[in-house]
Length: 444
Image 1: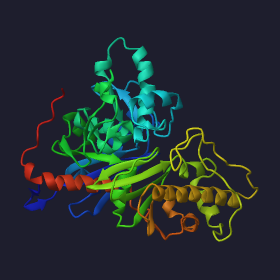
Image 2 (image 1 turned 45 degrees about the horizontal axis):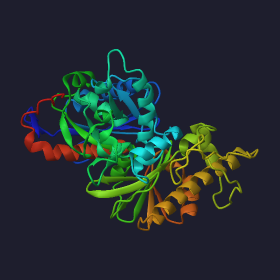
Image 3 (image 1 turned 90 degrees about the vertical axis):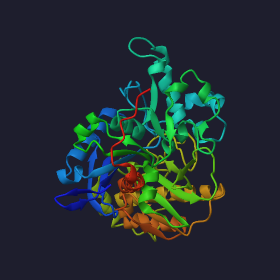
Image 4 (image 1 turned 120 degrees about the vertical axis):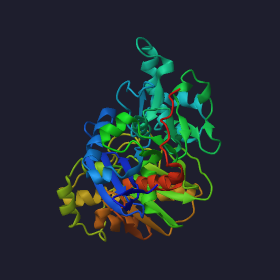
């Protein structure tokens, strides 16, 4: 609720935090949705290091002007969908996280016994497969200071949300679909609840749920008011959709380290490699390829990408037929952990090589939209592009040719902005209840 300082009314601000594939970003907005500050940093460590997530967030928030930090009323986080770690009930990691791009083909038989075929968790590229890999060595080493009753499985955004709250019990529904959460039935799929490790699964809450104020230690570390609400966030791709605010008939492509496609539909859909979320009361489907800007950076730095791209003529095809995956394995538009990259032959011309890579990425995107249409998604009228790749006009033209639809570039609409909007919405809803901050939740 608004407060007064020196006779002037002060409205709380909202912060969104995006834990992406390559780093952390934040955005702060006012009650009218205007962006007051944005910050970004690379991970302090690697994507699989939870301590780096926490330290990076602290560094970013502490770098904000004090007057903005002191006015923050709500914070919400998104994370890479599928990056999973095992931790104790007090949040202490039991090892590095397993990144979203890691497939676990050795878990195929175990998955078939746990969840129905065709659901999001049935893929060897999903979170459940990574959970089974994490559980294997932990089960064999169940000695010392922890046991199966002191074990949690948490995704990246949920773990950091737990640190903010001082309570790791919760998980946001969108982040847990590929772990086995059934969004329509509102329970864990198949045989999951009957497993000896079922207590490691989170209590699932909807995106946008206000869970309580910051824990005192987290508030002190960040330099934020203790009354600041922690709001359940979403996945990084869903956060980008919230930032884009698409109209009916719009598809959203996030051109980051990976290539992510999202589209609103009237009815939920299910298929291997497909994600189906509920966002703002609507069903959102899509998929994430392992291909994306990360492949380009294996060969070129940002300055080279900009210089070489300017020399590409999109109207003259390269004649190359690459499959620009960063390594073995793909999630969408095909769910195949053994699919191999095709990055040869490499021509002498770097311009031609880059054009071939961009054409390959455009083909994957076109195949992704065709796959969604085949599964029952409505036809698109245009595609909105987000992420760093949306700044490349030559790539936009190549994609437009491959997709056969108008492609709009909106590189400034970052996922952190989507999370800030979600936090602001929850703050507005909770305002009548904020005369006195709610007490921290009790840890069971």
